[in-house]
Image 1: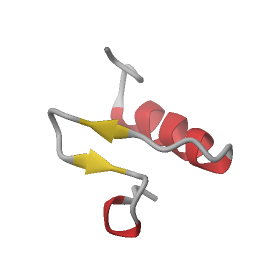
Image 2: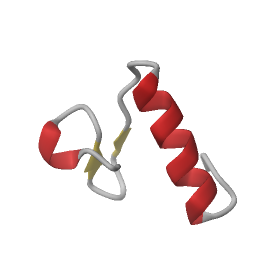
Image 3: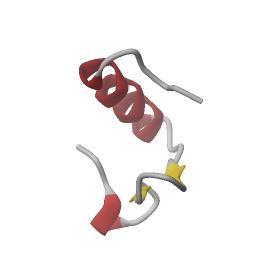
Length: 41
């Protein structure tokens, strides 16, 4: 599942989700925004 068509759009989507209190975990890309070490900002 794609969250964005480009990297800037993906960053915007993840930032918006984080502002709403929603965490993101990617099983394929080793990204976990539910922990301080994995936060994308």
